[in-house]
Amino acid sequence: MTKRSYRLGDIAKALGAELRGDPDVRVSGLATLQAAGPGHISFLANPSYAKYLTDTCASAVILSPAMAGDSPADVLLMDNPYLGYAQLSHWFDPEPVAAPGNHPSAVIDPAARIAEDACIGPNAVIEAGADLGAKVVVGAGSVIGARARIGAGTVIRPRVTIGHDVVLGKRCHILSGAVIGSDGFGFANEKGVWHRIAQLGRVVLGDDVEVGANTTIDRGALDDTVIGDGVKLDNLIQIAHNVQIGDHSAMAAMVGIAGSTRIGRHCVFGGASGVAGHLEIGDQVHLTGMTLVTGDIREPGVYSSGTSADTNRQWRKNAVRFRQLDALARRVKELEKKSEG
View 1 (cartoon, rainbow, N blue to C red):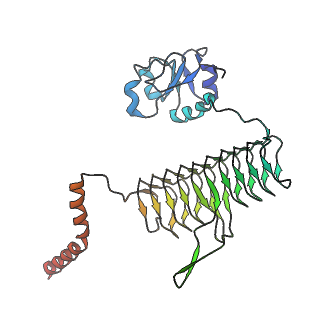
View 2: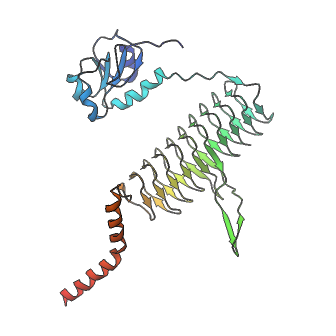
View 3: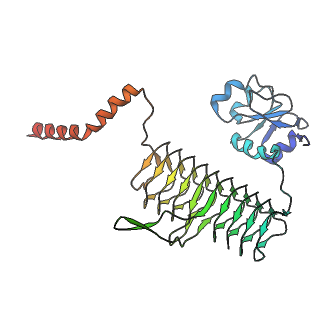
Protein backbone atom coordinates (compact mmCIF):
# COMPACT_ATOMS: atom_id res chain seq x y z
CA MET A 1 0.00 0.00 0.00
CA THR A 2 1.35 3.41 -0.99
CA LYS A 3 1.96 5.66 1.99
CA ARG A 4 -0.14 8.80 1.78
CA SER A 5 1.32 12.23 2.46
CA TYR A 6 -0.33 15.65 2.38
CA ARG A 7 0.70 19.27 2.85
CA LEU A 8 -0.61 20.80 6.04
CA GLY A 9 -1.75 23.83 4.08
CA ASP A 10 -3.88 21.63 1.82
CA ILE A 11 -5.42 19.90 4.83
CA ALA A 12 -6.29 23.23 6.45
CA LYS A 13 -7.94 24.44 3.26
CA ALA A 14 -9.99 21.26 2.86
CA LEU A 15 -11.19 21.37 6.46
CA GLY A 16 -11.88 25.10 6.46
CA ALA A 17 -9.47 25.45 9.38
CA GLU A 18 -7.21 28.35 10.30
CA LEU A 19 -3.57 27.27 10.06
CA ARG A 20 -0.99 28.59 12.47
CA GLY A 21 2.24 27.07 11.31
CA ASP A 22 4.16 25.96 8.24
CA PRO A 23 1.86 25.06 5.30
CA ASP A 24 4.59 22.89 3.74
CA VAL A 25 4.80 20.46 6.66
CA ARG A 26 4.05 16.94 5.37
CA VAL A 27 1.45 14.81 7.16
CA SER A 28 1.43 11.07 6.57
CA GLY A 29 -0.74 9.73 9.36
CA LEU A 30 -3.42 10.38 11.99
CA ALA A 31 -2.87 9.47 15.65
CA THR A 32 -3.83 10.28 19.23
CA LEU A 33 -1.92 12.92 21.14
CA GLN A 34 -0.15 10.24 23.17
CA ALA A 35 0.84 7.99 20.25
CA ALA A 36 1.61 10.63 17.61
CA GLY A 37 5.11 11.17 16.29
CA PRO A 38 6.72 13.31 13.59
CA GLY A 39 4.60 13.29 10.45
CA HIS A 40 1.37 12.63 12.37
CA ILE A 41 -1.55 14.97 12.80
CA SER A 42 -3.61 14.65 15.98
CA PHE A 43 -6.66 16.34 17.49
CA LEU A 44 -7.99 17.53 20.83
CA ALA A 45 -11.76 17.41 21.17
CA ASN A 46 -12.30 16.08 24.70
CA PRO A 47 -10.98 18.43 27.43
CA SER A 48 -9.99 15.41 29.56
CA TYR A 49 -7.15 14.74 27.09
CA ALA A 50 -5.74 18.28 27.31
CA LYS A 51 -3.06 17.01 29.71
CA TYR A 52 -1.41 15.20 26.80
CA LEU A 53 -1.19 18.23 24.52
CA THR A 54 1.99 19.87 25.81
CA ASP A 55 4.01 16.66 25.48
CA THR A 56 2.71 15.45 22.13
CA CYS A 57 5.22 14.71 19.37
CA ALA A 58 2.69 15.27 16.59
CA SER A 59 3.64 17.57 13.71
CA ALA A 60 0.25 19.25 13.89
CA VAL A 61 -2.85 19.24 16.06
CA ILE A 62 -6.47 20.09 15.27
CA LEU A 63 -7.96 21.98 18.22
CA SER A 64 -10.14 24.89 19.26
CA PRO A 65 -8.74 28.44 19.37
CA ALA A 66 -8.88 28.41 23.17
CA MET A 67 -6.26 25.64 23.33
CA ALA A 68 -3.90 26.94 20.64
CA GLY A 69 -1.39 28.46 23.05
CA ASP A 70 -0.65 25.12 24.74
CA SER A 71 0.36 23.23 21.60
CA PRO A 72 4.07 22.60 20.89
CA ALA A 73 3.14 21.73 17.27
CA ASP A 74 1.58 23.60 14.37
CA VAL A 75 -2.16 23.94 14.83
CA LEU A 76 -5.30 23.85 12.76
CA LEU A 77 -8.00 25.85 14.51
CA MET A 78 -11.62 24.70 14.29
CA ASP A 79 -14.68 25.35 16.43
CA ASN A 80 -15.40 21.61 16.26
CA PRO A 81 -12.07 19.71 16.24
CA TYR A 82 -13.86 16.37 16.35
CA LEU A 83 -15.52 17.17 13.03
CA GLY A 84 -12.10 17.92 11.59
CA TYR A 85 -10.86 14.55 12.80
CA ALA A 86 -13.90 12.81 11.31
CA GLN A 87 -13.37 14.43 7.91
CA LEU A 88 -9.63 13.82 7.89
CA SER A 89 -9.98 10.16 8.91
CA HIS A 90 -11.16 9.33 5.40
CA TRP A 91 -7.90 10.64 3.94
CA PHE A 92 -5.99 7.85 5.67
CA ASP A 93 -8.55 5.04 5.49
CA PRO A 94 -6.72 1.89 4.30
CA GLU A 95 -9.90 0.14 3.14
CA PRO A 96 -9.53 -0.91 -0.52
CA VAL A 97 -11.55 1.08 -3.03
CA ALA A 98 -14.14 -1.08 -4.78
CA ALA A 99 -13.66 -1.37 -8.53
CA PRO A 100 -16.73 -1.23 -10.80
CA GLY A 101 -17.95 -4.52 -12.18
CA ASN A 102 -19.68 -7.77 -11.28
CA HIS A 103 -17.73 -10.68 -9.81
CA PRO A 104 -18.08 -13.86 -11.90
CA SER A 105 -19.54 -15.77 -8.96
CA ALA A 106 -22.32 -13.22 -8.34
CA VAL A 107 -25.85 -14.39 -9.17
CA ILE A 108 -27.68 -11.56 -10.90
CA ASP A 109 -31.18 -11.93 -12.27
CA PRO A 110 -31.49 -10.65 -15.84
CA ALA A 111 -34.39 -8.45 -14.76
CA ALA A 112 -32.23 -6.54 -12.24
CA ARG A 113 -31.01 -3.06 -13.16
CA ILE A 114 -27.46 -2.26 -12.11
CA ALA A 115 -25.52 0.93 -12.86
CA GLU A 116 -22.39 0.41 -14.95
CA ASP A 117 -20.13 1.80 -12.23
CA ALA A 118 -21.62 -0.34 -9.43
CA CYS A 119 -19.56 -3.10 -7.80
CA ILE A 120 -21.06 -6.52 -7.06
CA GLY A 121 -18.87 -8.76 -4.90
CA PRO A 122 -18.28 -12.52 -4.85
CA ASN A 123 -21.32 -14.76 -4.30
CA ALA A 124 -23.67 -11.81 -3.98
CA VAL A 125 -27.27 -12.36 -5.11
CA ILE A 126 -29.30 -9.68 -6.90
CA GLU A 127 -32.91 -10.71 -7.44
CA ALA A 128 -35.37 -9.78 -10.16
CA GLY A 129 -36.45 -6.15 -10.41
CA ALA A 130 -33.77 -4.85 -8.04
CA ASP A 131 -32.47 -1.41 -9.02
CA LEU A 132 -28.94 -0.41 -7.97
CA GLY A 133 -27.82 3.18 -8.57
CA ALA A 134 -24.49 4.71 -9.49
CA LYS A 135 -21.41 3.63 -7.51
CA VAL A 136 -23.36 1.21 -5.31
CA VAL A 137 -21.15 -1.43 -3.67
CA VAL A 138 -22.58 -4.83 -2.72
CA GLY A 139 -20.19 -6.90 -0.60
CA ALA A 140 -19.48 -10.62 -0.80
CA GLY A 141 -22.37 -12.90 0.06
CA SER A 142 -24.95 -10.13 0.36
CA VAL A 143 -28.49 -10.57 -0.93
CA ILE A 144 -30.56 -7.84 -2.56
CA GLY A 145 -34.20 -8.90 -2.69
CA ALA A 146 -36.68 -8.60 -5.50
CA ARG A 147 -37.62 -5.06 -6.50
CA ALA A 148 -35.37 -3.48 -3.86
CA ARG A 149 -34.06 -0.02 -4.74
CA ILE A 150 -30.57 1.04 -3.67
CA GLY A 151 -29.65 4.72 -4.00
CA ALA A 152 -26.45 6.05 -5.54
CA GLY A 153 -23.28 5.81 -3.50
CA THR A 154 -24.66 3.33 -0.98
CA VAL A 155 -22.20 0.75 0.39
CA ILE A 156 -23.48 -2.66 1.48
CA ARG A 157 -20.84 -4.68 3.31
CA PRO A 158 -20.47 -8.48 3.12
CA ARG A 159 -23.26 -10.77 4.38
CA VAL A 160 -26.04 -8.19 4.40
CA THR A 161 -29.62 -9.13 3.56
CA ILE A 162 -31.88 -6.54 1.94
CA GLY A 163 -35.45 -7.85 1.68
CA HIS A 164 -37.85 -7.53 -1.20
CA ASP A 165 -39.19 -4.04 -2.02
CA VAL A 166 -36.88 -2.35 0.51
CA VAL A 167 -35.79 1.18 -0.40
CA LEU A 168 -32.37 2.54 0.60
CA GLY A 169 -31.54 6.18 -0.05
CA LYS A 170 -28.32 7.67 -1.33
CA ARG A 171 -24.94 7.27 0.42
CA CYS A 172 -26.19 4.78 3.02
CA HIS A 173 -23.70 2.49 4.75
CA ILE A 174 -24.95 -0.96 5.76
CA LEU A 175 -22.51 -2.99 7.86
CA SER A 176 -22.00 -6.76 7.81
CA GLY A 177 -24.74 -9.01 9.11
CA ALA A 178 -27.47 -6.38 8.99
CA VAL A 179 -30.93 -7.52 7.90
CA ILE A 180 -33.23 -4.86 6.48
CA GLY A 181 -36.74 -5.92 5.57
CA SER A 182 -37.10 -9.01 7.72
CA ASP A 183 -40.66 -9.97 8.68
CA GLY A 184 -42.08 -8.16 11.65
CA PHE A 185 -43.16 -10.13 14.72
CA GLY A 186 -46.86 -10.41 13.92
CA PHE A 187 -49.14 -13.22 15.07
CA ALA A 188 -52.83 -13.62 15.91
CA ASN A 189 -53.76 -15.89 18.81
CA GLU A 190 -56.72 -18.22 18.58
CA LYS A 191 -57.31 -20.52 21.57
CA GLY A 192 -53.64 -20.56 22.48
CA VAL A 193 -52.37 -21.12 18.96
CA TRP A 194 -50.37 -18.44 17.15
CA HIS A 195 -51.22 -17.69 13.50
CA ARG A 196 -48.67 -15.82 11.40
CA ILE A 197 -49.63 -12.46 9.88
CA ALA A 198 -48.12 -11.62 6.49
CA GLN A 199 -46.05 -8.43 6.66
CA LEU A 200 -47.18 -6.34 3.69
CA GLY A 201 -45.22 -3.11 4.23
CA ARG A 202 -41.69 -2.14 3.26
CA VAL A 203 -38.65 -0.63 4.92
CA VAL A 204 -37.71 2.80 3.60
CA LEU A 205 -34.36 4.37 4.53
CA GLY A 206 -33.56 8.00 3.77
CA ASP A 207 -30.23 9.36 2.57
CA ASP A 208 -26.98 9.07 4.55
CA VAL A 209 -28.28 6.40 6.92
CA GLU A 210 -25.84 4.05 8.66
CA VAL A 211 -26.96 0.63 9.91
CA GLY A 212 -24.56 -1.24 12.20
CA ALA A 213 -23.45 -4.85 12.13
CA ASN A 214 -26.13 -7.43 12.93
CA THR A 215 -28.82 -4.79 13.31
CA THR A 216 -32.30 -5.75 12.11
CA ILE A 217 -35.05 -3.53 10.77
CA ASP A 218 -38.42 -5.23 10.26
CA ARG A 219 -40.75 -4.44 7.38
CA GLY A 220 -44.11 -2.93 8.18
CA ALA A 221 -47.22 -5.02 8.75
CA LEU A 222 -49.34 -2.73 6.57
CA ASP A 223 -47.64 0.66 6.43
CA ASP A 224 -43.88 1.07 5.94
CA THR A 225 -41.13 1.11 8.55
CA VAL A 226 -39.41 4.46 7.89
CA ILE A 227 -35.91 5.57 8.89
CA GLY A 228 -35.23 9.27 8.24
CA ASP A 229 -32.30 11.02 6.61
CA GLY A 230 -28.98 10.91 8.46
CA VAL A 231 -30.06 8.37 11.10
CA LYS A 232 -27.17 6.41 12.65
CA LEU A 233 -27.85 2.97 14.11
CA ASP A 234 -25.12 1.11 16.00
CA ASN A 235 -24.60 -2.67 16.07
CA LEU A 236 -27.14 -5.18 17.41
CA ILE A 237 -30.19 -2.91 17.34
CA GLN A 238 -33.74 -4.17 16.79
CA ILE A 239 -36.23 -1.89 15.02
CA ALA A 240 -39.67 -3.51 14.91
CA HIS A 241 -42.37 -3.22 12.26
CA ASN A 242 -43.97 0.14 11.47
CA VAL A 243 -41.50 2.12 13.57
CA GLN A 244 -40.69 5.61 12.33
CA ILE A 245 -37.42 7.34 13.28
CA GLY A 246 -36.95 11.04 12.53
CA ASP A 247 -34.03 12.63 10.71
CA HIS A 248 -30.55 12.67 12.28
CA SER A 249 -31.39 10.57 15.32
CA ALA A 250 -28.72 8.18 16.65
CA MET A 251 -28.92 4.97 18.68
CA ALA A 252 -26.14 3.06 20.43
CA ALA A 253 -25.79 -0.71 20.53
CA MET A 254 -28.48 -3.05 21.92
CA VAL A 255 -31.34 -0.54 21.65
CA GLY A 256 -34.74 -2.11 21.04
CA ILE A 257 -37.74 -0.26 19.61
CA ALA A 258 -41.08 -2.08 19.70
CA GLY A 259 -43.64 -1.91 16.92
CA SER A 260 -45.47 1.19 15.68
CA THR A 261 -43.52 3.63 17.84
CA ARG A 262 -42.78 7.04 16.33
CA ILE A 263 -39.50 8.72 17.26
CA GLY A 264 -38.73 12.36 16.51
CA ARG A 265 -35.78 14.15 14.95
CA HIS A 266 -32.32 14.60 16.54
CA CYS A 267 -32.96 12.03 19.28
CA VAL A 268 -30.06 10.16 20.93
CA PHE A 269 -30.64 6.79 22.63
CA GLY A 270 -27.95 5.34 24.87
CA GLY A 271 -26.91 1.69 24.75
CA ALA A 272 -29.40 -1.02 25.76
CA SER A 273 -32.26 1.44 26.12
CA GLY A 274 -35.69 0.21 25.11
CA VAL A 275 -38.96 1.74 23.99
CA ALA A 276 -42.31 -0.02 24.24
CA GLY A 277 -44.68 -0.17 21.30
CA HIS A 278 -47.22 2.34 19.98
CA LEU A 279 -45.57 5.30 21.71
CA GLU A 280 -44.74 8.84 20.61
CA ILE A 281 -41.25 10.19 21.32
CA GLY A 282 -40.75 13.87 20.45
CA ASP A 283 -37.79 15.65 18.92
CA GLN A 284 -34.45 16.04 20.73
CA VAL A 285 -35.08 13.38 23.35
CA HIS A 286 -31.93 11.89 24.90
CA LEU A 287 -32.18 8.53 26.69
CA THR A 288 -29.24 7.55 28.86
CA GLY A 289 -28.02 3.95 28.79
CA MET A 290 -30.47 1.18 29.79
CA THR A 291 -33.42 3.54 30.00
CA LEU A 292 -36.82 1.84 29.59
CA VAL A 293 -39.60 3.97 28.10
CA THR A 294 -43.17 2.78 28.67
CA GLY A 295 -45.08 6.01 27.99
CA ASP A 296 -45.07 8.90 25.53
CA ILE A 297 -42.35 11.55 25.84
CA ARG A 298 -43.49 14.88 24.44
CA GLU A 299 -40.87 17.30 25.73
CA PRO A 300 -37.20 17.45 24.67
CA GLY A 301 -34.58 16.69 27.29
CA VAL A 302 -32.58 13.93 28.97
CA TYR A 303 -34.45 10.94 30.41
CA SER A 304 -33.14 8.06 32.54
CA SER A 305 -34.49 4.98 34.29
CA GLY A 306 -31.64 2.51 34.71
CA THR A 307 -29.89 2.33 38.08
CA SER A 308 -26.14 2.39 38.46
CA ALA A 309 -24.23 -0.64 39.70
CA ASP A 310 -23.66 -1.03 43.44
CA THR A 311 -22.35 -3.71 45.75
CA ASN A 312 -24.63 -6.74 45.80
CA ARG A 313 -25.32 -6.23 49.48
CA GLN A 314 -26.47 -2.62 49.00
CA TRP A 315 -28.43 -3.50 45.87
CA ARG A 316 -30.39 -6.18 47.73
CA LYS A 317 -31.27 -3.71 50.48
CA ASN A 318 -32.45 -1.19 47.92
CA ALA A 319 -34.47 -3.82 46.07
CA VAL A 320 -36.34 -4.63 49.29
CA ARG A 321 -37.00 -0.94 49.89
CA PHE A 322 -38.28 -0.55 46.33
CA ARG A 323 -40.93 -3.21 46.96
CA GLN A 324 -41.98 -1.31 50.08
CA LEU A 325 -42.54 2.00 48.27
CA ASP A 326 -46.29 1.51 47.72
CA ALA A 327 -46.93 0.70 51.37
CA LEU A 328 -44.74 3.61 52.42
CA ALA A 329 -46.67 6.00 50.16
CA ARG A 330 -49.96 4.86 51.67
CA ARG A 331 -48.64 5.43 55.21
CA VAL A 332 -47.49 8.94 54.25
CA LYS A 333 -50.96 9.76 52.90
CA GLU A 334 -52.59 8.50 56.08
CA LEU A 335 -50.23 10.60 58.19
CA GLU A 336 -50.99 13.67 56.03
CA LYS A 337 -54.73 13.15 56.53
CA LYS A 338 -54.31 12.86 60.29
CA SER A 339 -52.12 15.97 60.46
CA GLU A 340 -54.66 17.95 58.40
CA GLY A 341 -57.50 16.77 60.62
